[in-house]
Each structure stands twice: as structure tokens, then as C-alpha cells.
Length: 235
Image (tube, rainbow, N blue to C red; front, side):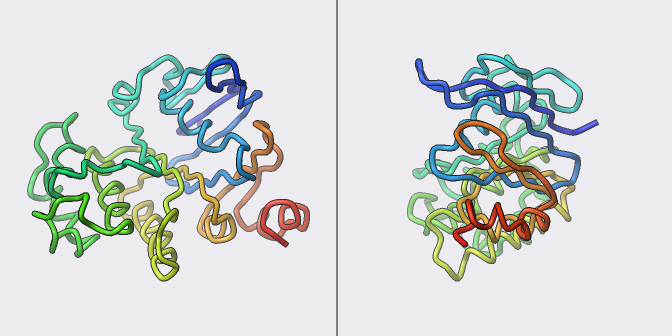
């Protein structure tokens, strides 16, 4: 049984239908990437999965439970966390306070919880008392990921993790995602414009186009597909 199973998801904004029956699975301990052109519905799919927007049709099951109608806070309590592309930290709070906010569902984080963050991202340890809003985009992204991990989720939804990062930090971010999957057994579903690099670290991938499933397969399989390369990888 997949950890996350979305079937025939129809959703959108107002009267505009963006998703027209999208299917998606994530297995335990997998990294799965959704790619596709701008406007394909990638981020909309993430938001519908997490309960930020309603699913007009279809079902989302997580750990065998139907979460289709749950609100984001209830989805988080099920063990599924979401890291948005923008506004993903509390800018006026310190690094440590952001981590404490990330753990609010489980209560106050233990010293062991915090130490695991300091070990994974030493720069956050150095800046634990610094206001999050004064840090670089890359450091804020590290903090957002760490905050989401404070409740030890089974699945992390990450929207555009490399967006706004300096080129020399992009490789590091993807390495960190693999490290998180390997060290915490947390599955990852990400949306990413940097399709080639994202697929290279992914177990599987989905290509959305015009709000519908266009291709799916192993990350390597999609990278090696001439059709996917021509249409979506800029070749």
C-alpha cells in the first residue's frame, strides 16, 4: 500500500479548474518529484493534497486513512508536513523559536530534537538566536525544512526547494533532501522547476501538463526519455 495515494483529483481556484483528474502515489522512504511546465498544476496538486484548497472530486489517502476533507492542521497531525516555496518561516522569530513552532503539535522540542537540527545544518546552530527574516534565502529554506521535520513526519511535501538559491547552493539542497530521506526515513514529494537535478535524486517522478498526468516513471527512466527531454527538460 502506498504511503500517499491520490486518485482522480479535481481542484482549482474559484471557478477555474486546474487539476482534471490527477493520480499520484508516494511509497515509504521514497523521493518523488512532480515536474511540468508553468501552469501545469504542480503546486495546486500539493495544496490539494495538504488541504490548503479543496478537492472538488477524488480522494487522498495517507497511511491508509482518507484525509481528503481534513484541514492542514489535521493533516499535519496525521504525519504529513508541507514546506511552501515562499513565506515558509516566521521572520520576526529566532531560528530556535521557529523550530519550537514547528514542534507545537507534539509540544516543546527536546534537546535531542534540536541537536539533530544543529548536526544536520551547522549554520542554523551558529545562528540559533538570529531572527529568521535576516537570514539568506538558502538558510531560510534549511530552517523551513528543519521546522517541518520537528514532528518526525512520515512524508514531507516540498514546493520548489531550490527556488531563489544561489547556483552553488542548489546541489547542496538536493543532497540535504536525500540525506533527510536516508537518515529520518521520511518520504519526500517535491515540486521542482530544476527538473533534471530533481529527477536525478528521485526514485520516481510525475510529469503534469495542463492539469493532467502526462508521464510517470522512475527518475532515471524519465531523464532518459527522449520525449520527456524534448518537451520538459529543455532539450
